[in-house]
Length: 263
Image (cartoon, rainbow, N blue to C red; front, side, top):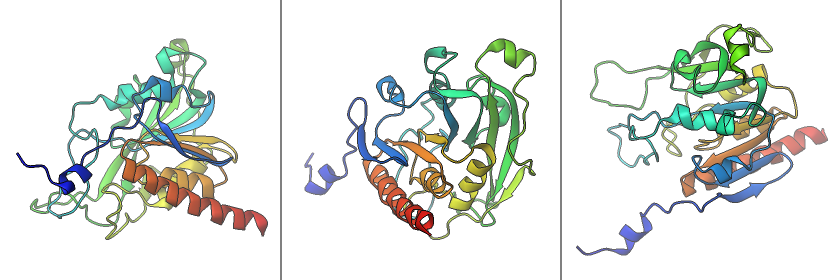
């Protein structure tokens, strides 16, 4: 079989062990890395304020539109909730990872499914109303215009979860349907989320200066929203081209945040 130069350019290059820092400031850390890597997880400051991520759903990205990039890990072979459980509490720790009683938002999953692997004392199912038809299978009769978001309150100790502790609401009690139009005609990433949606979640569950963590950063929208809301972010993305896109977008957000601070 003859291999062309284009074939070599299309090869997926895995990130190095422990990841590679592509961007680091007092507002943002962005790594090209594998979120399964315990050496990478160990680099996240303990006691961070929010875990907010959109992992591959394990169903494969399906679209009849040509030119859409593939999503690493979107083939159903990875138990993503167990992976994210390590980010919330590495090796089952009661002291490391996400701070106790802080929140998680996981796109694409039912809230009841996240309770055990992410040690949540209380969970709620949210709905993102996308306002536009999805970019999925264009041959289907019905088009999905919404996406579930699992919200949970992380409690590290089983006794706390069993006795119902960790039932506190988000900072601003709101309805469970969030209507934000998805990016239209955007080919940067198949699952890119609107910045105002992520800003709403971050504003509801953190205070200024908190660290927001996204192990499956995609195009970096979580980081953009965090920076613009006066929070800090720690982003990890497996695919190099998307990791570099994260850097570009977060750097633009940092410049805007600097301008807002200077006013």
